[in-house]
Image (cartoon, rainbow, N blue to C red; front, top):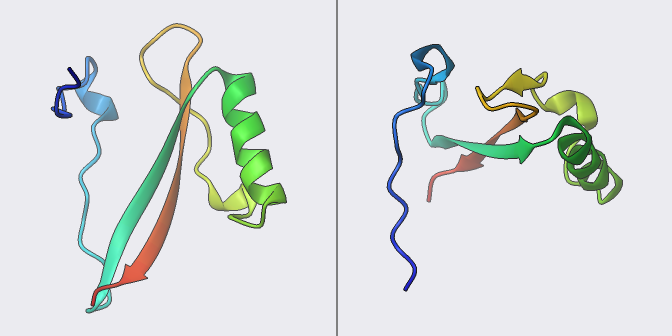
Amino acid sequence: MPQAFIPSALVNPALQVTIKPATEPGREVIRILVIGSAHGVERIVHELYRLGFAEVCAWSKPQPTGRTHEIMRVLTRYVLVE
């Protein structure tokens, strides 16, 4: 039986991110996170670019996750609050 997602504390507190509200009223910050091997993450980022989803340079620089051979990249988007 699947369990509900329960966020756990990161092993390294320096990697934790504080989410700040959007600077403009009526907009919400949405972050898309890709985690995996450097090769896998780059393939996904470039595939999403090819599909017209986001420019490669719109993603954050690769960041370590604290796990061996694993990185993450984040894309920040803003959506209008209805």
